[in-house]
Amino acid sequence: MEKLVINGGKRLFGKVEISGAKNAAVAILPAAIMASSSISVIDNIPDIEDVQCLERIMEHLGCKIIRQANSVTIDSTSINSVNANTDDVRNMRASYYLIGALLGRFKKAKVDLPGGCPIGVRPIDQHIKGFEALGAKVTIEHGAAIVTAEKLVGANVYFDVVSVGATINVMLAAALAEGTTILENVAKEPHVVDVANFLNTMGANIKGAGTDIIRIVGVSELKGCNYSVIPDQIEAGTYMIAAAACGGEVTVTNIIPKHMESISAKLIEVGVEVVENEDSLTIISDRNLKAVNVKTLPYPGFPTDIQQPMSTLLCIANGRSIINESIWESRFKHVDELKKMGAVVKVEGRTAIIDGVEKLTGAVIRATDLRAGAAMIIAGLVAEGTTEVHCIEHIDRGYPNIEDKFKLLGADIRRVKVEEC
Image (tube, rainbow, N blue to C red):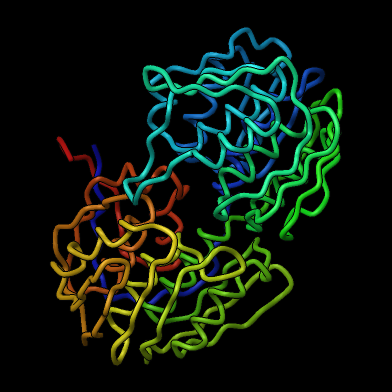
């Protein structure tokens, strides 16, 4: 086990380059399974634990995978199993994309139900609804989803709730179904669009990703392709918030500024200067921060994955801020850790009431989940004294080389071994 040791109070200056989007990569990798001929070369893949986990799962199914730097070559022509039942499958949420990918190509899949961060109940009922609409039979037995179909036939699917996972998963299966599928009330996040673009590069016929309705005309075969994953909106937002909280001037590069608009707007409201360039944003902060209210919403609203880092920033803003978490019901577990550092926060259901304090002070804290881990790092960076962040395996699931990137900005942060977490 490892921990991060942070000596806080330093302003941040310089440039930080953003990696490929975690949420896109963990869906695009399973989608590569659907190529029945030729290989896929996927660039801008982040070097994170969730990606490494998926690569191991896919190799277990029979894929041949070669990683070179941030590029992954996938040969899925020799897959010999549709049974994904390893510990890796059970330990990560995004492994459920294997269901849609395997069902689309082989018309059957058996995938153990996944885990992931403990941020709330995440049922797959909308996934099942979509698969059944396409003609599949779905049963849950011994902790696994067993999905079979003689053939998949296009259908109209209206999702009862906006779900990124269900939108992508059903889109995967429908890409190789007979006829036309229309998905309504879909998620519009950038990584949904990225998966659709990847499938289209493989030969799929998908239109409307990024809007309320996605139209999919099924094709008989998908082929390998070359593709580059979009930049990570959430990683970029994390560094933007860190710069705002610590003060200084940081340029976040290799991004799509339009994807950042809801975060940029909220930081401007807090009192931070945001300068937009073609593929970068510069954050200029004097730490004279104002309280704001935040409500998480599906894209293009404020991302739920940025709520926890934002809550750390608001702990040192002047006045009272209110955060309403409309996506997940258990995404304030990190608040108890912030309180150890002197934060004044009251949680009522899905609402956090934050009264800004003059300073946070260093403490021994832990990452309760992936994005909470990023929030803990930001708290350590702004705090007076030394902070130890434990359970950082959560952070490694989604942030490549996070301590090295912060070091380049002038942070005093290092990773050290510990006996247990």
